[in-house]
Image (cartoon, rainbow over all chains, first blue to last red; front, side, top):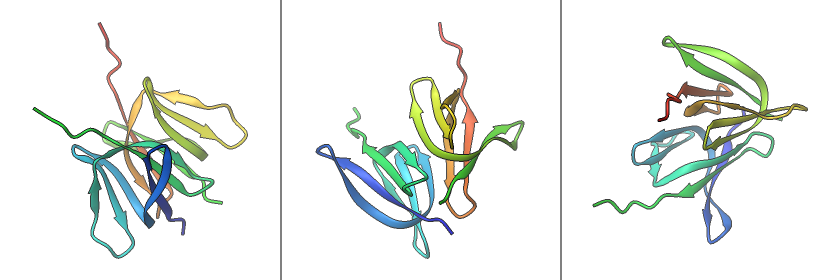
Length: 67
Length: 67
């Protein structure tokens, strides 16, 4: 199997937010991330890069301010 | 290593467009897909699902009509 880790850009650096991720899906509120044997979580972000060689999915935060 | 195949939704079915993909990246014009030893291509689509268990990345076409 081939799970990846998910990182989010924070102050120009990649911060790991979840390991052993099996499913990533853009949703209205951001990106849904599902780990192995875990409930999915939604992160207010968008996908920046999926690097399948390094097994890394990089997200960048989105501004959630809405009027 | 852990390359995935990229599929695009077409008439409700998944159509494989590239195998052995190492990098996927949303860009303004759609999604950039890079294969192993190949130049990247840009597909007018957005990411629908990244399934890391099945090694499948599913795209859905976007409407490119712009005024």
